[in-house]
Length: 424
Image (tube, rainbow, N blue to C red; front, top):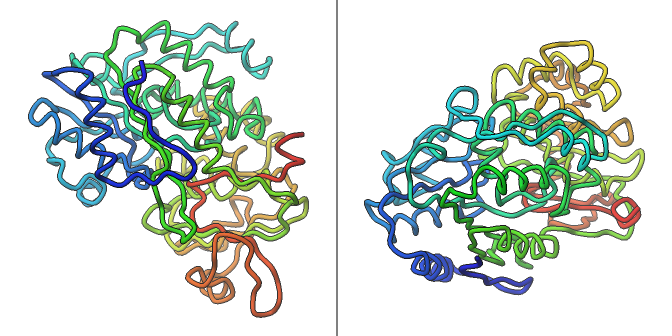
């Protein structure tokens, strides 16, 4: 059932609008005694999930007993991040999701079904895993809060991904990422109906229909002056809200270009991007726009590691971003990658497959580390002088020397493609 919907390309929802919309939906749900909120972590700070969690706490008071950030494989939310993103929510309500040990396998999507929806890309079963707190917490309402935006693993983020992946387990996360990579992310990004989404929908339909889950989705974009604005809010206990949010996100967050881009500069906010695990959104989200032989330059002042998880960081450093054939061969030959398929998928996602050049300009990683992982390296200070973010607009820019670049200030907020690659 759809409890609330509001949104359009030209809509701008204020904080008061978000509060009123959420309260209207929650009032329709009736009184609750034990509420769990599952928002994204700090890597999705722009989603407005933080303020929506605060509004849920305002509405339910002491009946809101737990907040479980959907970490996926990310590092736990720090007290400072909680204070910034979830200002007004008591910090003692926050729980840490342990994606390796704190989960329950609630069912299994058959290998035959996985093979069918993936077009034969893979044929293994997919384990549906959930955080123990979601499965056995005995809540009479589970609010899954998050942003719908183009995503490299599933096509569009949001809906049941927030639970099965964000609050899922190591095997489910690994296999879902690998399914998407093997199928081909360029065939999925920006699309709501994808193989990975169908697998999660199967799990929802067969294993979690008895859980009192309600999904709260935002769509966030940029105004003409560059400000982040909320374009939509959708609340439902099924996929209807996600479908509406995904349709709006495709209009708000997807920029279709007539020609491929020869030179792109992407800035990674140091407060949000400290690893290539996250920072490679600069690659994922622009790859369908990049010209063959083009240059992608990534200004990454906060970059200090490859993976947020120590083991994933080690695997990235060892195998590098070498492209699909090399990664699949490494998976076949090495048990450590077979046991960590999300890392293998990430290595595929982070490669240009030799089609365009990727140059990282890191704040805290060395030339040796960057080049060892398969990227080009350039000095951050020198490149920042040449491409000064405060002087650039999120569009085509003509530099002082007459050169032209396409600038993106936050790759998390969009997806870029030229017509020939997206429609081909």
